[in-house]
Each structure stands twice: as structure tokens, then as C-alpha cells.
Image (cartoon, rainbow, N blue to C red; front, side):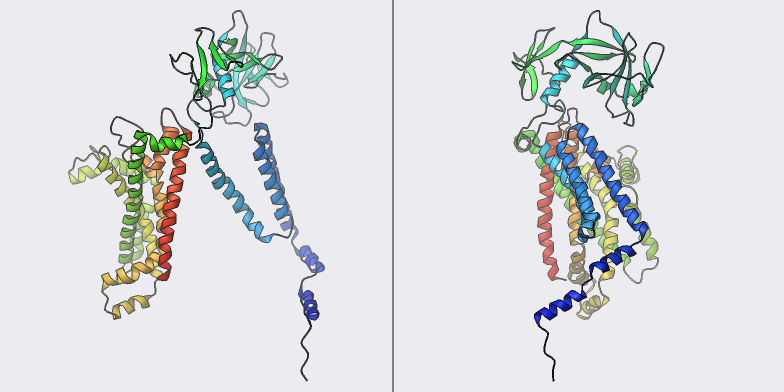
Length: 547
């Protein structure tokens, strides 16, 4: 007689009996080695300490949003790694945090900057520009005393980039620290002073050598310690004179909050705010160099497409940019595939040696290879002109400069495709070629109709990635031609410029850097590459049918 099937309750009870009990979990936890627990909690505590230090620095800088994000990351670390749950999150959390910190946040910051006028003369807020103007107009008060001065940065800070401070000694021998926030007393304990009272060393500060002071002369020219009254308003400033003295002065350019104007008390000129700058009220004379940063909306984007010079330049650069990336991918792929097909022939001996030699251009650093090629393209002393008896101005003529860039990138890029195609060819079964030969296909027809479609299935996504890389191939252009040659009497848009080198020149390479406009160009590049890559991936999807 057959046994009756179990009821639903009996089946559920049987399943529950198969699940590990709490005692089993406890026993498993007890079997975990002690050193593993110590290492785990040590890493958790170390991460929390680092996040706490970062949060403290952010609090001092006043970045409260970033403080909240640091606290949130700390809570996530505890929630994920301090328990046995959320096993997938233990692997995903580091990647997500790094992606947000190194990719998403820079992208969002670049987009936000593209809507501002951030650049030379527009680096500060309006309040900071007023303070800078008043501080730089300080003139020594007649009959006032001078401080003994030494310059320093906070202990542990980089002497080349750290915030500069004045270490001051007044005639009564009292010590002070002067920063952009004002003058603060310095405790005499641990302070070492010279015969003139000049501070030689002080706890918490690293004094600068004369060479280091000279290297930061541009920063110090705009630096002054504000002298504040009881209401916290600046009534003057302390300015450096020479390497060992500082004087007390009063500003000759004073801001009036009621009229929002700045008056030069020496010349009588009144400056009013206009286009994020202080310009003379009558329109005669130049604007003050200290402007301020403000939101300009889509002005940077409209300038890129409506300014005739920029529009024509961007159009030429974009066409060359697309051609450069497409030609580079096509030429390097075809040459690399051709050599890979040759090296894949079983009748060829010494293939390992040949392959090693062919990989050398790819193994050498780009900055070395590009500089070597730049010297070989020299019109008078270059190797290429000397060997072939030519007198071509490779880097001075726009068309020849583009040719030189393409030839150099062909040399640099074909070994990559040689390696990729070699691996892909070895993955194609030999039966496929034998079947093609039986059907009467010759070598050319076999490559065109059999090998190429199968090869493109493997390398199609890599070709899109290579296009995106070469679309932003800053290193080669900068090292080989620096974007030049520049024709037409202008120095902004070069004949071999890519969009990325133009963005660099606008942001850092010009006389008046414009970070806001350069950020707008970078955003445009991002969308162009995204659209082209999307179209490319849609096209390569059709290759799946071949596989």
C-alpha cells in the first residue's frame, strides 16, 4: 500500500528542520579564528578614524554637506561590515563609494562649474573680492610701528601650497599670528626668537626659507592680515615689507555697503559692480583685477556655439577630433590584425621573438615615445627628413602636423590591436577555416567572410573603447605638438587641437584661465563621446547574430 503524500504543514516543518539553527550560527561564529575578528574590527575602526579625521577637516572648512556624506559613509561601513548580513553589500560598498568619489562627484562638480564664470579674476566670492581689494590697497599709517616678521605655514602643511601666516612680534616683545581671519596672540611657550625679536620657530608652525618665500611671491603679494575693530569690521591691515618686517596700514580703497561701491580715496575714482567686476563709474579706465564668481547660466554654452571665432574653431576641432579618433582606430586595428594574421601562420618560425619585438612600442611609456617622434619630425635635424632627403616642416605646417600625429599614433596603437587580434584569432576553431577551404574559399575570401565577422564579435566593444580613448588622447597631442601649429595670428585654437587639449588651454594654459568655459567644453565632450559610444554599441549588437 502506497504512503500518503505529506500535508503542507508537514512539508514546511521538514524544511524548517533543514535550516541552520541559531545554535549552529553561534557555533560557526565560535569557529571563526580570533585573528580574523581582530583584523576585521581593526580595519573597521581604522576606516572610521580616517572618516572622522576627514569630517573634522571638512568642519573646519565649513563644508557641512560633505561632513554629512562622510558620516553617512561611516554608518554604511558599520551597518555592512559589523554584521553577518548584507553579504553582497560587503563587496559592492567599496566600489560604489569609489565610483561616487572618483567619477560621479567630479562629473557633477564639472557640470556645476560650467554654469559659472569661475576663472582668472573671478576666483572668489563678492565679499572676498572686496576684502582682497581693500587689503591690497593698504598703505602704511604714518607714525605707526613695524612688526618683526617671519612667514610660516601650519605644521605638516606643504610649504608650496599651504595657507601662509605671519608670525609677528611687536615692539613690546609680544608674539602674534596673523592670518586672513585676523590677528591672534601667540603663546610664548616654545617660541624661539632672534635678537631683533623676529620669531625663528614656533610650536605648530613651519617657517619658510627665503627661497620658499620667493617661490610664493605671487601668493604673498595679495596677502594681508586684516585689523578688526570691536564690531568685527576691518579698519586696516598688516602687510609684509621685505622678508623681516610688516607694517600697519589702512586701505585707500574702501567699500560702502549702502551704495555697494568702492571709492579710491587717493584718486577719487568710484567703482561699481558690473558683470562680476568692479568697473569705474564713468566708464573710463580699467576694471579692478579682483572680480568674483557668480552663476552665469548657459552663457558658457551659448558662447561656445554663438561666438563666431569659437564656433568656427570648435567646428574645425570637432571634425578633426572625430577623424583623428576614427582613423586611429581603423588604421591601428587593420595593421595590428594584418600582423596578427601573419604571426598566426603555423609555417612561420621564431614567432615568439617577433611578437616580443612588435609589442615594444606598446610597452614603452607614451611620453617617451611621443618626445622621440617629435625630435624625429624636426625639420632641420630630424631623422625622417635626413633619411629620406626631404625638407618637410612636419610640425609647422597644419596638414603635415596632422599627418605626423596620425603616424605617431599608428606606431603607438598597432601593438595593442596586434595583442588583441592574436588572442581572438587563436580562439577561432580551426574547423571553421577547414570548412571554408572545403567550400572553395581562398585566403582573402576566408578572411573577409569568415575570420573578420568572428573577429569583430570579440573586438567590437574594444574598438568603441579605443575610439573614446583616442577622442580624448590628451597626452599624445600635448607632447607631440601642444595642439599647434597656431595659424591666423591667434594662440587659442591649434591645427592639431582636440577638444580636450582646447579645454586644457582654456582652463590652465592661457594668460587668463577660464575654468567655467573649459568645464562647459568638457561637458560637451562627455555628451559627444556618450552619444557616439551609444551608437557604436547599438551597431555592435548586430554582431551577436554572427556568434
